[in-house]
Image (cartoon, rainbow, N blue to C red; front, top):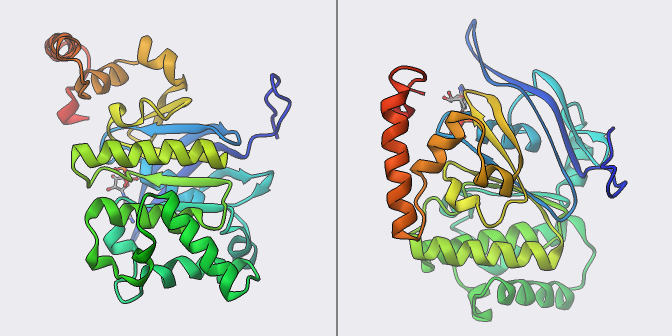
Length: 291
Ligand code: ADP
């Protein structure tokens, strides 16, 4: 296992040459084609690319929800790809996930208090009072009133439900969270609030995040590093600041040009760049619509 020479700390997550095949009868389709990256404690890796590029498949392979055909996925040095179920269950307090749609990932028949108690009951031996204290604390940390614990998911807005999903993922103090398009289903103003909350919790809890998004502008402020995926391949990988300042791959530049920025002048420049890239792409590369 490699180490980071500047800190001499092993990566929390090490994905090496990961390939994932989906099978449909006799036919097989390679959705991820040899992707490698590492993630250290307390850092955020943005995984970006257009729909169908293989982002969720990578997240799912790490979580044990998609088959690893070859390569390795190590968490604190332990191979996840071939791990026994019982060991994976033990690790589930350290590895968590926040999905795009909190409504389908929350049990609508259970109160928020019950939903938040579940991970604690699985992994920690707490008294009823201690459990309640942790639940109340977590609910406050995600910006919801304490009485939310007596309510059901249907009684909350989309943004509030995503806060509940965040609370459920974080209540057991995980080390690593896969965030799979966690704000894509929310209105723009709510997206910003939820992103700020995630960034704040990431810092205060020292979380490592794998942040999956089709939108480079969403991951911009939270990512230390970026992997840009196209058709299952990592076409660009490096420090987020470097990539935003000077993307090397034309696909990354197209994604950057397509992602909205708050400054209208910068947006106008990007639009011009996108149009120029589209004109140039007829001669060199396929347009984004056809990628
Ligand atoms: P992204 O998250 O970037 O939108 P996905 O990882 O969901 O991309 O999908 C990558 C490719 O794998 C797509 O072509 C998609 O159609 C295909 N795919 C995803 N899940 C399955 C599945 N369960 N069975 C077959 N093909 C799948």
